[in-house]
Image (tube, rainbow, N blue to C red):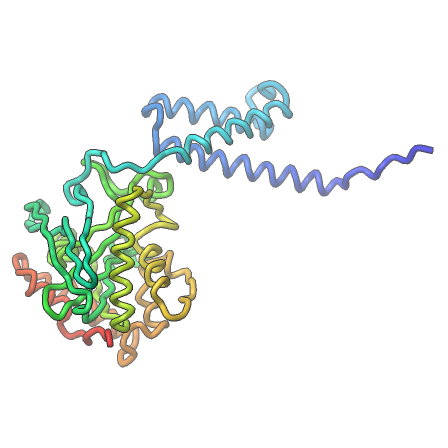
Length: 348
């Protein structure tokens, strides 16, 4: 006697169909944005390709203009194969070093090291003019890592209170501060796009610069709202953090990397470096993505002086009121203005 197996319950078919439908919608949205950002066939060709993909996705979902292109099963198989091919195309896009770069990120930071003595090459020290133009100036700086006296985190707000660009500045006992900034490496005449940052539009760049260059341009030239926070960090940890930046220099020299708006940006990469040198693991937090609230996160970790509450910190750390009257100021004067009225960072 032959016994027929129980058919799969109706809800299971409904669930699989719902999951596949969400997959088609999400993958189509992702791919269409990737094609639009990358434009592999130029604007017209890429627009046609997006249109053809939408037709295929609609056919697979049963939202079609006549009937399925071939049959539901074949259409589904075609969609999956085409999407796998698109993934191969996307992940084969390699970051490069040989584009026509914006002068601000045209040179690659490099260094030589003998023990604790480090010589950095291609340190940026542009002279910014009131009209937004600049005089290019690149230099080398010799640094003794044992002379590090403090670390500062700078947040620069350029698109509302939730998102800020994060910079890290090192103080030294025997010379001017030095600031590191992880940025997109823009090509000439290229503008930043948060959406483009999700789709391998920009390479990653590590800039070492004089404070009057890289912070002044934000507070004075661009009118961004800049906040300067001296942080509590033991000297050994500050030294290790500087070495992490040197490791990042090595990484980018060996293999250029893509910037990613969510996972590989100016805040998450700094967090990864600080995490690598911390004595105990730092908690992950939504404020690492909503980088405008990074100072709140640092305050909760007691990385900021606890003598002030957070609102006092924001009021005192605000750079713009202290520097807005200084159209022309030396590096030393600007660095002094940044720190005016703030407790010195602890690097004991």
